[in-house]
Length: 276
View 1: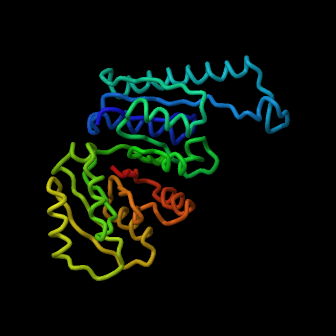
View 2: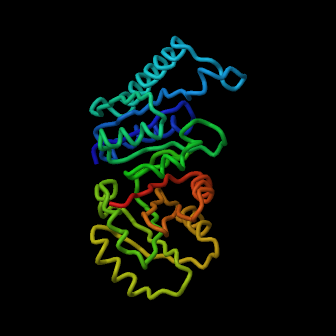
View 3: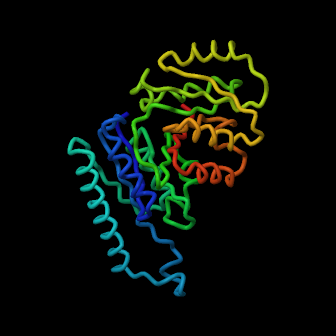
């Protein structure tokens, strides 16, 4: 893994995500960070003058761009100070809406990981309010970092898994994990509420997870999501992963369930892998 992409706003979740990545520099292998800031202003703002939509002239818009540029400079200085001068920090200042800007920068810069900060508070910052859409449009793995999560060396990873879709495990072959190798303890969590053949499950996973130490766990809880989160709390998991596919940790059919899943994971970062 080489490049991390971090979209910026001014919210607490994004600030914590930046601190998390800076602290992780010696444990997560990356050498470059791309900071993305959108200066987009809705086309309605210049033509509708109300308490909600204020007229913005050219000078005001330019002042906004300048403020964004200065903010990126400030964030860059803090990243270099906290993570080390060996980390290259590049800026992507876009006039496109954030979602479109994100898609464009992913195509142009080919980052390996998208990092998004998340908070439990409603209506705090663009990233937090549009987290679902940003996760959905991303074609690269997404690391969602709760605003109260502090980095610690990854030793215990929770992987919710449908044993009927083991082909999805190819997405788990990510540099974030292969970097640690046998130092990681992978807790595979069966999300199928039925009796399993433990011996057969272990045999299948042993052939697919050659470079990892792992254990298999099962749940009888009716609410799969609660079962996952309860297990993460009990085992003091460092990171929850989500494989692509219909049985993804977040794929509970509705966007509201995705929000619910992330919001209730208040202390554990979540890595959402993508189809390769």
